[in-house]
Image (cartoon, rainbow over all chains, first blue to last red):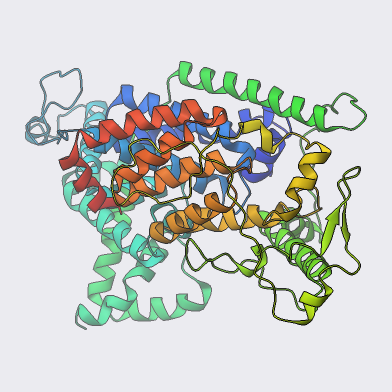
Length: 204
Length: 361
């Protein structure tokens, strides 16, 4: 972590940026670029489009930073922008890509499918390959979550936002957010039950 | 214990799984868990799900994305600095950026955190707004000392909040040399004793005609003929004769201290409603605000936001119409045209739009 900004809130960084301090915005980008990009990526499931939307989100924050009044948190504001862009993108999609058990695991398509992975669940399976398979299966399971559960799950697990802030972003009561999060976790647990013991042994 | 009995504990289980259960609830939750197999199993599933979620791979955004953003941020920072420089009365160069703040340690930390919090700033703004209102309105109207409700909800497009109602037109003059408002000594005193004189309604500044506004559902706004006002006109200092002409304006002279606070606060109300998902109310507020403050610098931005609000409501014709109006203003022209193109694209995918809209909103 770059020294000097520890303990400085996002809101203070944005205020400093609006006074002309570009370094403050660099710190803001450093803090949030990765979770933000992954939120967008898992929402639109298209790496190229995700890069564009991540960039557009951050550019909007740059352009409109002078209008930020501090009525909400910077993260709440930024993820609201990102979420709206993702929804707009979804609306433009005539056909939504559904990942199924028979769909290729990677965009470039190495031919393996989730079914292959399940079938290859043998004690001799290479540990690293199993870890990779688990992650791919996890991504697929997250993709399969209903939209309203997936966005709550991603905001919580990627950016570690409090449920209260997530409620503000998605515009529903906090208890509804918590219900969606519970359903999401239980679905993931069911979808990945085969991997649980293995996941426990994976290095963090 | 049945599953139905456990419903009230479900969200507490999630809090427990994330270590965020309220201290006051923790003993109750754990007490319930001690005697409930159903909830213990549910908690175990949540914890296993959470454990799995930690393996979700995180990918870095492409380097060129970050570079482009940082480049734009540096440009914007220069713009901010230049604006601040221009605002300095002596034209002196801006101070270099302050070093990162040193966190305050010790018992005063909470006080510093409170004083620098956005909530504190909002409360200060509110107090300032109310204070200005209490000071200013009675002085202008000569009425009772109690201030009118400053942030009253507009009841409809034709009903303006009390705080925005114009002062009786002959009760003050504007000094053309200084632009200062002076209370008129005698004029209008007769009216003050009787029923308040109905103020002359301000002719709204001309707006460009709405493109595509043929639907009966289009917003109906007074659109007197004439050239649209230049975008920068609202920001430019007024010539003395303009000040005189503005004496009967609904929101009296912009030169008066604090006069811009109320429109800003009302616009912020519309934005807050939109953020809270109350889009219909937000749209009504935005429309009323734009009608009353068409020359305020924020008006083009408000038009864009209103268009976005209508888009969220699925009223694409109205959204399009407001985007077209916004596009007449240089400051937001590009953004408005880009949004217009996006809107047309959205309309081309109605089936998907309906589905996603139903899911998310």
